[in-house]
Image (cartoon, rainbow, N blue to C red; front, side):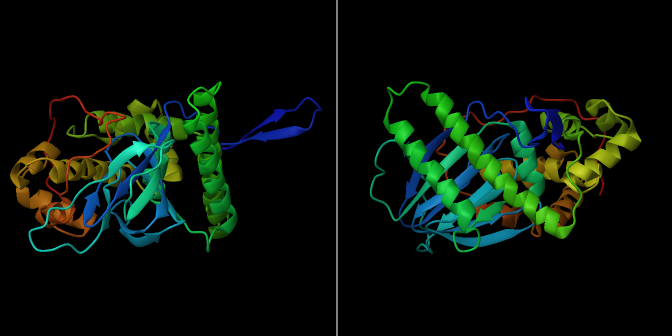
Length: 334
């Protein structure tokens, strides 16, 4: 949303930030691991910020574009829980089973480990969608020194708050610090968009989010453009323009990727066959599903599953997103 101009007490106009998002329910913890591990954070309407305290890790994500980067101490990455991703380290030996993260409270010392990160979790649909369409945001001290300094300064204050359980308004301070971290991350995005000459986000982004969440609640439904426009409370023409302004792509392409992403999460965590996945995703055949999956993620469902299959997510808060069953209305053949 665009910033709104409001009058200050002195009469001068004040621009209200478009990133003024209330982050209720946000929390932080430590995650650590040693040796070989592969970890995908719990999928759903969450926005994650992972800050590497010690060690090195490979971060891989598949949406909206393929990302494969090495992160080291001092680096940070923000990623949507709606996007398939994983943290992995260690080559491992043949037959060795990769481990997950050990989760511990932020206010307590972490157990000895090769790798440790500070993890922030915000169960917020607006943030999750925003970080999904923007893609993972990587912050490195050498490339973004001011932003990195502010983020780690906030982490130090967060550790103090978590360590003092008797502190007055402790949860309020934690939420405020998380919101400060978000604003600073958003500043980097704004600067990069301004340098590229991109248009500012549309003021109707909230309505676009309503439509996307309708899709997430019923991913197997054959959504048409009129359906999406009605879910957003907009005309078809206005909805298409608003959607492209917010997401940068057409509604059809994003909806297709969201449907495939939902199935991709299940392939990595459930014993779901390709035929069953095609049926769940609403495709007329497994061949059509494999073609669409390969176009979206650059590899077949079977290969995608093999490379990302790991242990069950270690995070238990918040609960994983569950979508209710809905009747299918049509089959896809593309």
